[in-house]
Picture 1 (cartoon, one colour):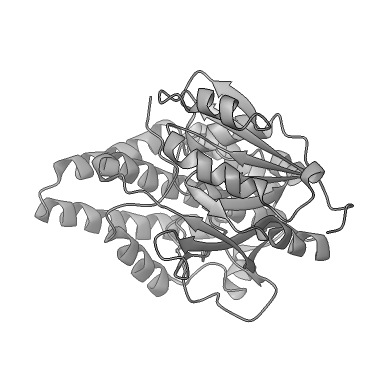
Picture 2 (cartoon, rainbow, N blue to C red):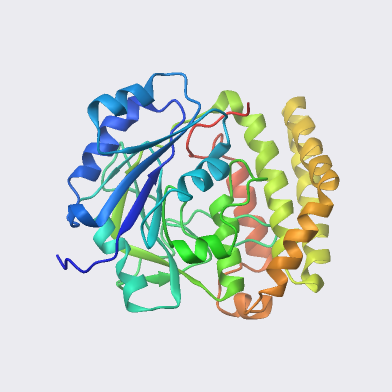
Amino acid sequence: MNVNLPFVSIIVLNYNSKKHLKECFESLEKLNYPKDRYEVIMPDNASTDDSVEYVKENFPSVKILELYYNYGYAGGNNKGAEITEGKYIVFLNPDTKVHSDWLGELIKPALVDKTIKICGCKEMKYSEENVLSGFGGYLTIIGGGTKEKNAFLKDENYIFAGYATGASLLIEKEIFEKMGGFDENYFMHHEEVDLCWRGWIYGYKTALVPTSRIWHKEEKFSKKREKFLFHIVKNQLMSVLKNFELRNVISALIISFFYNSFQIVKYLLLRRPRSITDIIKAHLFVIRNLSKIFEKRRIIQRNRKISDKELYKMGLILPLSKSIKKEIDLSKRDYYGRVPVEEP
């Protein structure tokens, strides 16, 4: 391994994930990457399961950032990024196990092509080691991201995609800071979709790396499904308002309105009033925060290097029919795999 490889900071955001940390950190200790060329940082979102004490005792090399408030996925990772020393940052879920070549392979495209600033890996099912769970995907017209399994399975060193999975995402620190990090209004869900989308707008490419692998447990959190729905809907709306060019914002909002109306009818039939309430709350949140969203939009659009038309042409944003189909397929799922975070 080349000792001149860049220094990398691996952030493992924790919230009551003690049962997963042993396997995650042990796999990181076995990386085929120079030990003096990476650090592991664990920001802790005010856990109550003694995970901080456990890591201090069993993994003393891990740098711990104790937070006294649950900042969610976006805020917790942003706090962790502030104390990193690496040229590159990797955001890694705690309920994962990494392949020994994971990091060395993940960083390769960024070293070969200087326009690549974000890299993602293959996300394999933990229970079935050779079964692909996800690999990033496309951006959709209503502000979401598809979770692809087969579309990017090509015999290539890397493939460009709309976004990379947030379970394991590498980004150049300077670029992460320039773009303002994760949007903390998202709290959880679609943060990586928004980050990669903004990256493309700024002229920074996202690449998926087939030779880099993790195994992800993707716990189910059905009891919190409604809160997940609230964040999903509001985050998609914010992405539309921030990231599309003006001529596409109106059409995307109209499509989002009809799509969410369909969702409300579905939940009426399923007798899930809490889900309906959370869709409405998501829209109210966006309305109340329009001034903040528009300020972020002004910054993003001022830094735009690539037009929506070019992103569509590159196949990074799905056209209308495919976008809606993908979103409907996703809405049939009972959960979205992610770091277990709860609202304070």
